[in-house]
Length: 433
Image (cartoon, rainbow, N blue to C red; front, side):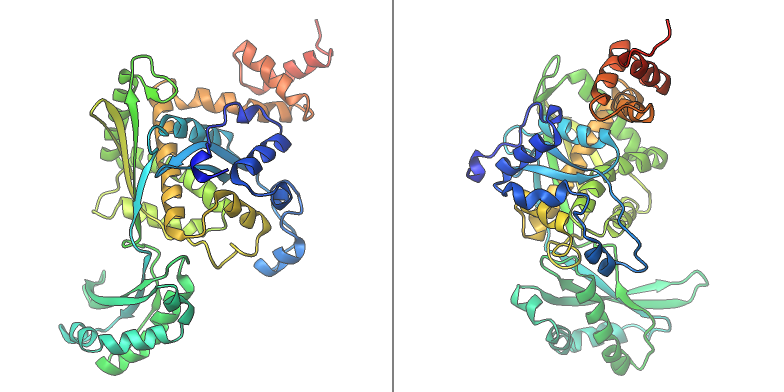
């Protein structure tokens, strides 16, 4: 199956058994079923590997591995792996991706993967000593900093220059920071940037006669960004790839609320990160760094606001988001964790930039789904409907009984523990008259 023939539009995917879903994922991705075994096996992460990944290891902790369907990003279809315990996240992402898949689907562009290393001068030289040194020694810096990274240079990355930031600390004392910019290509980049910052520090000390304090990567990759845009046609009554104009107007209204009020914005942004983090966990990324960067960027202009914005333009509901994303397809656990390797095979992505564009697209879709639910039926109804399975399991239902208990609960219009308990008793013929 060629990429042009692939379609992530898989109606009824949620009704399939786990085995049938993996078969569908295998058929879509072209990855043989045997190579996806890590996604279904409790031994997907062997103890021998786990013991080498962390300290004081005693075992492994499992979370569900799911796939969101319907995604089309820059004309390419994807089935997206997500690791999360919250069923509404996967369902919502798939629903919104279906709305957004018309034409090219969600469109995304990304900048070059430039990361920042910081070299801190607690007692800086007067202006413009540092600034002049950076300019005068730029060729020396480039040669020295690139010297120990031949693989990165061969891949087209490396040192890309520096700048000086002058700051004042809380006690009114001046300090300075030299930012080195490094193109890290398909890596997240922490190791390369940290080693370059450490290599630059003694040079800068010698050239200025001033002591260097910290030298460390910044997790605010302001130059490594993804912009995404999604469009849904307006149509009375909505539809598979359309949304009702009145519903769209409520989504825009909710967007303005999130853009205005930080109390609402942090919840809206948390919803975006629900989708992004789930993909990052499935693909072995540093989700803590991405979270920190996203929230810092939301406040970058001095006021915390929403990352995504929705407007009505040309008879469409249009959503846009700009977000910093430092992701990698090489290094870390991407080549070590069997499930991570399998998920990347399903995605068919080996480069960091298209991977980042897909991840940002998931965040935008998640935001649309959550905002739509809030602006229409309210978030709790959908949440409780999806949590009916949890109530059924807590009642003691077996794997085969859970769907029947959930169906009985939904038929009654109830989504609480008491309803699950009663439905299970009735299913087993144990209910009291």
